[in-house]
Length: 443
Image (cartoon, rainbow, N blue to C red; front, side):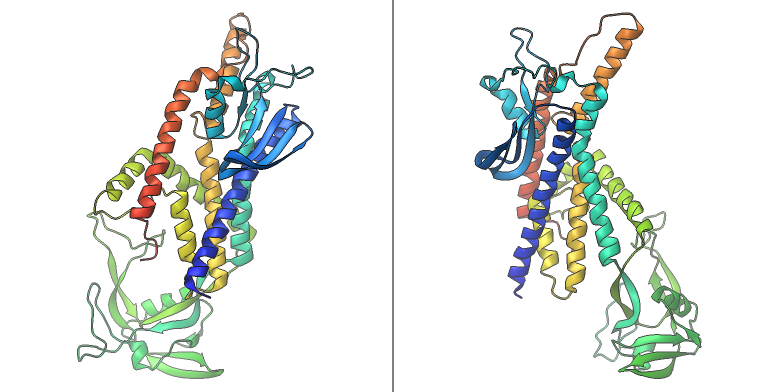
């Protein structure tokens, strides 16, 4: 299949995944709101003009022209106006919240029988559940997709099948022309070991894993040992003498370690000159939550340092500096990464699909964590408002004062506008950077 078509398939796959994730995020708000008898007037996917909608019961469900998010509109998210007692309808979607509040003509009177079905009358714990529903849904999706990736596809692990054989012994940081007289054959090349050979024994010991084999090789420098491979269905035994060579020290994160001075670390160990093929190995269920937790930790780290990260993106976008591969990217960048993954024909299709599933899982973790930031118009801002209401009521009760009632979170709208403007500006910057200076993940 054409790489261009594969690229498009990857982009569409992730775009659909993002759309479904956002839709389910809003379902996470919709279900508890209806469970608690709040009147929900709209459930919409996207923003802008309505393309299609249908009304079921008291709720209108539909799709809008710009598939950039979604919202659930509930009656009475804010307490009534003191002047006329009208209740403002509001929404869980960020941009729809701003649009609704900006349109004074959009105020909606509470209908007969709806007096106790407004959001602001809910107990604090119910308000928190409604607003936590969206992030919780994304968290659940992320965990489920992580389970699919790990248990259904597996992680890429080295096998005992040889992928490549280095021809020349090369010191760290140097290059040698394989056709020159300076090319000193590696032990594997000298022993005529070939790609696709399966190593079954080393130094008289059965080989069961690549990690086990590399440990034996590294410990056998300067010593002649036997090695048996399976080639074209038949065993072939020969001898090799691993040479002492400076090899990179790899840390727990899989990257080359550095010393206290920041220099890359090497150690002298036995070297054969072979590389392993990889295969997807299904993982146990016990591996799912640790990986999900690590994803969440990484996302939280990016969000905590978001101002500095965005500044780095801006600097890279308008200079010759490269983008940080671990920095934030927009939906455009995500689509580009998805397309590049899908178009990597040298990688097995199963591995590419696993990577795309993992990408959508990571996006859901990002949506969950980002929406919990305690700033309006994010879900975390509404949760913070509910917690403030609980504290205020508890303090009033403690000092024998009248119940202050529901906290009017509409008072925070100036902050909401500022935060929303910053978020939209950040989004525009990331989209620009992903177009003119995209993140290079694959070299």
